[in-house]
Structures are given as structure tokens and as C-alpha cells.
Amino acid sequence: MAAQFLALPDFIDPEFLRSAGGATVVLLVGFILLAITNKIAIEFVGPRLTPQGVMVLRKLIRYLGVAFVIIVALNQMGLNLGAILGAAGVAGIAIGFAAQTSLSNIISGFFLIGERPFELGDVIEIDGISGTVDTLGLLSLTLRTFDNRSVRIPNETLVKSKVVNVTRHPIRRFNLDIGVGYHENIGHVLSVLKNVAEKNVQCLDEPDPLIIFTGFGDSSLNFLLGAWCLQEDYGTLRNTLPRELKERFDVEDIEIPFPHMTIASGKAFGPIPIKMVDN
Amino acid sequence: MVILHRHEEWRISSWEGDQFAELPLEGEIRDLPSSLEWRRWDGGAGDLEFQLRPSFPEYPVIAKPKPALTISPGGHALFYIGIPASLEVYGQCDGTLRKLASLSTDSLSKSWHGDRSAGQVCYALRTRARRSFDPSDWPEHDIVVAVDLKNESSEAFLFDRLFLDLGHFSIFNHEGHLWSNACQIRISEDDEDGNDITYAPNPLDPASDAPEIATAQAGKARRSKIGSAFTSVIDIIH
Image (tube, rainbow over all chains, first blue to last red; front, side, top):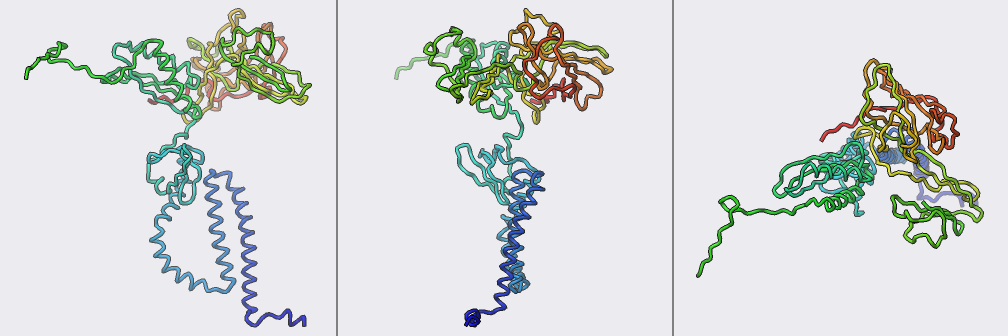
């Protein structure tokens, strides 16, 4: 009775069971080894890589490892992989054409990891979009804009486009263009600009602020004030410096003119003749 | 600055300038202006002890003599540099003295030591480095740091800027002035790894016997190196 209870039903092939059991063992052991390999690789190689490099390495090990384990398991099941791969070869050509863009993105991703034009957490500008690099994957990068939108940018686009890394360097210069009235004294204005920059808390003493007279504009004498600050102080400097400058200009009675045009008659500065006409 | 212990908590309010110049040194809590901005820390009912300790600013400093001085080969020049002290407030919390706040006695201007791609933030000192110490002419809360520059190179050395890390300086109290232990910086041809700096255990005279009231934050050291101590390495490209 016990032997009959334990006998397999006729429709179940013992050979199939053995294969399936073997495949299951392969899968279990394979995934466990894969997890261990992943951990060891990240521990030894990870410190030498950037955070995005670690992310890509982790994904690579996972995808390749899973594919390898599945192939071995299928082989264990007795499936003829040669035939499958042969058929896949034809399909592969078609898929290859379709996957051109994905492959290009993956390869571009490797170039970005090697070249490291930016890292996770950097603020970059690309195609008019600014934001913080949130993730850098095999196919694309995710940018988080300052108003908290998420923008996905393919790696191929990053390699082909001009990317401005705003936070690459620890200090940054804030440029402020200023125009004052033509009757103002250039030397006095330069002195006031220098004094305002010196007193601003975020403005660094060194490098020296750039203060130059840039030219005679249509409506004003033009100056450039370039104040250096730490990256983290840029936003504050951008708010405080123009305000302090305006307040100081008000105290010094320095005019900031609006754009205007003076119309003069043909005879130098004579009044424009006006003739009354009766219809 | 106002320090208050009330409702089992510490409260500190600080401000710059003469905003509350009319505030008396002693008075009732209700006399305090409502516009004071407070920072608060939890403390127990019996936590009444507090301490005020001087310290150096949190960043290194850049000192400049005005005008610059040329030191001949083999020569040396002693400078007294005034560094505005910071005031650390320690309050007792659950029986242990903890640092509650660190306040600067002067508003220091931030600066950068290094080039545009790498370096460190520091403070630019407003008062110039001086050749002598005159107690009547010395800012009240400035720590006196005596720096002896010794030119061991074969060429004249133009001293116009000094970057000084403050980690190995202790603070001493002498007749109402704060002093640090003195140091000597050697200038030689082989300065690729940095300039040698030797720290004395005590300040120079007249404060050589002064008691130490604050230990060096990075620990006491006999010798050290300062990288690019005299170099203004900012590449100015407009």
C-alpha cells in the first residue's frame, strides 16, 4: 500500500523530474552564488568606482549572471541550446537593427562612466534643462529638475550634446551686468562696486571680484561685477548682491537709467521745428 | 549675546552690531526684547553649569602684511597676526557639559585658498600682520599669533600673503589678551611638499608664562607642513 502510494503517476516521466530537479538546484545555487559574487565585486571594486559606476556594475553582474544561470538551467533540462541559438541568430539580426538605439545608449553609458563628465548629485544643464543627476543607468540618465520633475535623458544624447556641469568646481562666479547714467563718474562707480562686493558676506575675498568697465552703451555706462562664492552660497549671493548694490546706489545717488533715446534735429541740438498746418 | 536657563532648557540669542546695545548686563527676563531670536537646547532641572571658552575660527586664515615685506636670504621676520576669537558656549545637559554654540567675535570674510578647481575655504583677516605687539592698539578679542618667517633659500622672499592652518595652536591668557603658542615657518628652495612649520609650546614674551586655557583642536604638534602657504595660486582668467 505504501509503495503504491509513493509510486509516480504514469504521465510523469522520472527522467523529466530528474532534469527539473537538477535545473531547480542549478537555479537556486546559481542565484545564491550570483548574490555572493555581486557583493564581493562591489566590496572590492566598488571603492574605486563612482556611485554610478557601482550601480552599472551591479546591474551588469545581475543581468549577465541571471542569463548565464538560466542558460545552464535550460541546459540541465536537456534543451538543445544550439538549435535555439541558431534560430535566435536570425532573429538576432532583426533585433539588432531594432536595438541599435539601445545598444548605442549602453555603449554611450560606458563612455560616460569612463569619462566622468559629471557624477551623481551634480547639477547639469543640457538642452535648456537644468537639474540634479539622480540616477545614471545603462540606457539613460534621470535628472531631477529644481521644481521636482523627473527628466529621462538617453545616454546617447548626453554623449552627443553639450553638457554644462554647474557644480563640478567648488567655487563659482556670479556675473552681474550693471548700467549707470552717463553723468556718473566711472572711477567712483568702480569704487562703490568694489566696496559692495567686499562687504557682501557670501562674496569671497579671493579670488578677487572681477570689476570692470565694459563699455559705453546706448543708454548707459556699462560695468561687469563678477563675484566669486562657494557653490552652496550661489543662490544666496544671487539674491543679496543685487539688492545690496541697489541700496548702495540709492545712498550714493547713482542713477540706473532705463533705456532711452534722445532725438535731436539736423542742426546740432537745435529745437525740432514744428509747423502748424491748417487743413 | 544672552544666555538663559529657563524651563529646564538653555536658550542663547546672539546678534551682530549695535542692534541691542542698550540691553543691560543684568535684569529681569521680562525686560528682554521680544525680537530676540533664540536657539534652544534641552537640559535638566539641575543642569545649571555653563562655560565660555575661546577658540579659533573654524576655517584656516589668510593674513597679509600691508605693504608686503621682502625678506633677504638667510634673514627672518617676526610678525604678530591678530585672529578674531570665537566664543564657545558649553552648557550642562543631563550632567554633562556639551557645546551649545560657537559664536565669532567678529564677522569674518570668507576667502578661498587654492585654484578654481580645488582648494579650501578660509577666512581673510581684516587686520594686517604687524611687526610688533602693542597691547593698547590691539583689538580686544583678537588672539595674538606670533609667526617667525625664516628665509633659508638663496633668494630674497617677498612676503605678501600667508595661509595659516590653526589646528595646532592652543590659546593662552595673559593680562587680558589672548595669545597662541608661537611658530616658525621656514622658506627654502625645496618647498614642493610644503613649508616646514615648527610650533613652540608657549607664546612669545611677554606671555611666555601665560596659562593655557584652550588646547589645540587638532592636538599639539611639534612640526608640521603647510602646503602652498605663501602662494596665491588662483589662476585669474577673465
